[in-house]
Amino acid sequence: MSSQTIDNQLIKSNILQKYKITRAYSEQLCQPLNTEDYLPQPVDFASPPKWHLSHITWFFEEMILKKFSPGYQAFNESFSFLFNSYYQTVGKRAVRAERGAITRPTVSEVYAYRKYVDEQMIQLLEKPISPALEALVILGINHEQQHQELLITDLKHTFSLNPLHPVYKENFDQTADQNKTDGWIEMKEGIYEIGHHGEDFCFDNELGRHRVFLDHYQIANQLVTCGEYLEFIKAGGYQNFKFWLDEGWSWVMANNIEAPLYWEKTTSGNQWSQYTLAGLKEIDPDTILTHISFYEAQAYATWKNLRLPTEFEWEAAAQKLDWGKRWEWTYSAYLPYPGFKIADGAVGEYNGKFMISQMVLRGSSVATPPGHERPTYRNFFHPKYRWQYTGIRLARSLKKNE
Image (cartoon, rainbow, N blue to C red):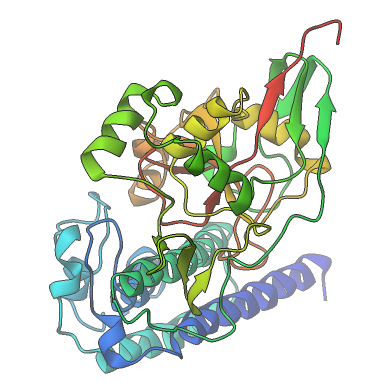
C-alpha cells in the first residue's frame, strides 16, 4: 500500500469521525428542549433552534451532496428556499425575521432531514475524496460549530424574555467563571506578524498574513469583572454622555440601556441579578462580565482612562494571554487583510460581503465548541449587539521611554 493511499485513508477517517462528532453535538445541545422551545424567534437577529438544525443540514446538502454525490435526490426541494440563510448565489430564501413563523416542517421532520443527509454524507465520506470535497466538508464542519454557539446564545435570548426565567440545564450557567490571571502584559514596539499560517483550517478572513508595526503598549491579562463594571454603573456611567461615542450614546438613549444584557434589579432594588441558562442568578462581583456591546465596552474603557486593544495588539499578545472565556471586543473595524479575495460561488459569500460597519472580536467564549478556537479567529458583529458571550479586555499605550 502506497503512502499516498494511507494518507488518503487517514484523511477520510479523520474527517468522517469529525463529521459524526460535530453532527451529534448539535443534537446533544437540543436534548434539554421541549418541542415548543424549537420554534420562537422574538428578534430578527436570533434564529430558532429548529432553523439552526435545518440550515446546517442544508449546507451539507446544497454545497456538497448536490455537487459531489451523483444522482443525489434532495430530501425536500422546498428546504433549499426555507433554510438558505444569506447565499444569493444559491437562490431565493425565506425572510430572516420570519424564521420563527415556519411551523412546518415539524421538528420531527427536521430530524428526519438530518438523518437522511447524514446517511448520504457518511456514504460519500467512506469513499476516496478529492481535495475540493475535503475542503468543503471541513468548512461545513466549522460552519456547524459556529451555529452550535449561535444556537445556544439565540436560545438564551429567547428564554430571557420569559418572565418565568426557564432553566435550560441546571449546570449550564456559563457566567460563573472567574479570571485565573491578572496584571498587565507589556509589549514592546516593533513589527509583528498577523494572520493565519500553517496547513490547518482557517476562514478566508484570517488569510493574508502580513506585518504590522505596533507602538509600545500594555494589555490586561484579565477580563473586566461584574464587580468592576458595577462601579461604572454606580458612578453614573450610563447617564454621562462624555464616556460614549455619539452613536453609542444615541443607542443608550433610544433603548433606555442601564446595564448589561440579561441584568435586572431584584425586587428590593439594591441588588442585581442576571438571567443564565441555569436560571436567574445573583450577580457575583468576582465573575467575568459578559453580554456587553462594543458601545458599552468602549465607554467603560474611556471611564477607566484606558482603551480597548486593536485586533492586531490582541493577536500579537495572544500567546501570553489567558483567553477563551469571552469573545473580546477590539477597537478594529472588520476589514480585509492585504490580498484578500472573495472566492467564486456561494462559498465566497461566507465572510467578504460583511466587511462593513462591524467591529472585530477576538478569542472565543464559553459557548464556543471545543477545538473551534484559535488566536487568529476574527469574529465580527455590529457594535450594538451583545447577545453573544462578549467581554472587555483593556489596553493602554506607553510612551517610548516607559
